[in-house]
Image 1 (spheres, helix red, strand yellow):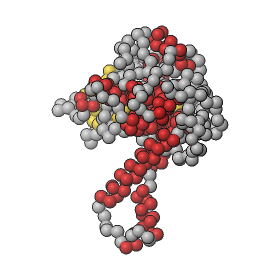
Image 2 (tube, one colour; image 1 turned 135 degrees about the vertical axis):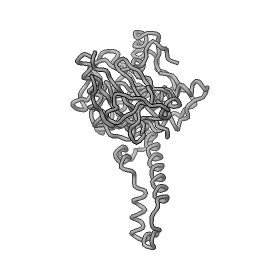
Image 3 (cartoon, one colour; image 1 turned 30 degrees about the horizontal axis):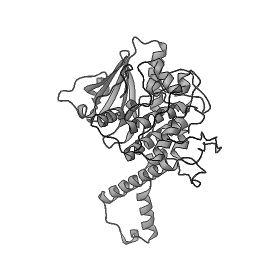
Image 4 (cartoon, helix red, strand yellow; image 1 turned 90 degrees about the vertical axis):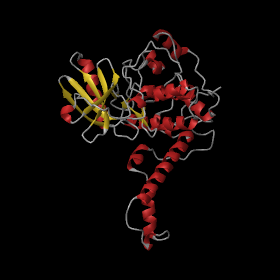
Length: 381
């Protein structure tokens, strides 16, 4: 279990304590916009996270940031979160609703992830003396990877990926949130230079004050993957200096042997200390191991769509819609078609070469340019 010398700015309450409106809702900064305060669920250096409900009793999270004592850079960071959230629209990213200012307070209204966050889930699992199964780990990792690819395609660096910023819905779907220190690069070849983020998830290049890019988000995702499997962060220390030494030069941690070689190899590749040798977000979702999970996700969504179609009230199908008729086949195809959100979320599946010639265990990764890179030649112990 990690030590407490570093504390996160935003701590969301466990879902059991924030499951619904209180008996006596109070006013909040968004009262003039139709929001009523339910309860505070987080406290930070510059503001609060509040569970609110609108006039239709839908629950949202309102992040209120006091900008009266902020300097120019801090104000810019606060406004940056609004800008980034407003144009990121993806099924695995916390949805932005609106923002407004009242009395030097910036309010950002976002969808409420009523399942808590991944950090809480990991902590509860560890406290119960249990482990997370590989199937939910792979599902959450795949959802986060799809969101990360979407962000990187839009030249957005998150820069603070961690289990506390990965939120869960009541149906256990993952949502990436908290874009307060994200950065939009001019192009995919650009690099950032400001050392920023949560210490446990800092990449070696950031620790060494080198320019960094999308590979740092990939490193952080590798840390989260390890954390889900081992129920602890991969690198821990009593102070920042010792932590940096472990990240840059310490031995790489081993995922428990109960998990498959595919998962262990994936984590090992994401935690490569050379950012040029890490897989890109595109490479990640093109691995066979992840592609198989994407196919399972698509199958589940199609099954849900078909079930919803059968339960929907309406006239009984005519003889022309029976199997075998062109009209019936067309209707069936429409039922099985992916929902719009999934069409945007998933990259088309790629045909993989035989084992040993492509990405994943047994072969070097293939980057989006199609050029092979030198394999690090590592295999997880």
